[in-house]
Image 1 (cartoon, rainbow, N blue to C red):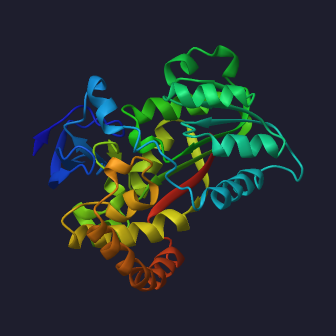
Image 2: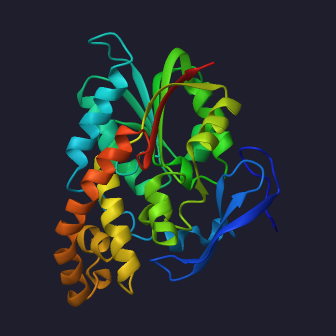
Length: 314
């Protein structure tokens, strides 16, 4: 049993070890992943300090990570948000942790009034040139005009990166109008895919993923924040199929995330060596063929690797 900071879900202070010395593919530093002894939330230990975070989020990480699926992904997300409103409704939406801003720009094109938060000030400046109101998280907390102002709030694969996820969820609830909806996605630490690959799971991504949610721990965190799930999905195809492929390669190659970096890195100095790239490319297609039926079966059983939940205020 190991002491830790208070768990953001249950307040527990002890954890058991899930994985020891998991290597970060960017810095090479090693981190443990524990499970809260009280609720089972996965927690990266030790969490990096604020002054260290920049080294784990370099430019190569902030590149276009879904350049091949971005258009399809934002359209799907937009349709899913709109299904909870009357046909033709166009309201006000905030995207929490908007990244490059492709989703908010898409929703603006669909006729929504949009705002965003993001820690990368360069991205916020680019969005401002597109007429999109955006703030850093600290500044957004002081935007009293945002309280109760939004019909929809979204948080796509951000909650696992946040030091205080309980506070983020409470804040997200405060932004919603009475009949507003909140969409949140996280990798499922309790999924068969996570169990299949263990410490080599692509979506473990320590130390950027500070918390590792299961369905039970996410439900508990949402309930604590005053949010009630109204619809669950357990698959995000572009994340989940690649998760199997890259995780299998992580288990067999001596370098992690070779295929991912080969496809996404905008920095030529960090593109893996040709031998590793070609080995990854050659293995990718048969691995996809191996993964797809398992992924579809797991999703049919509601055990896919991604947790996507739409909530309303209690």
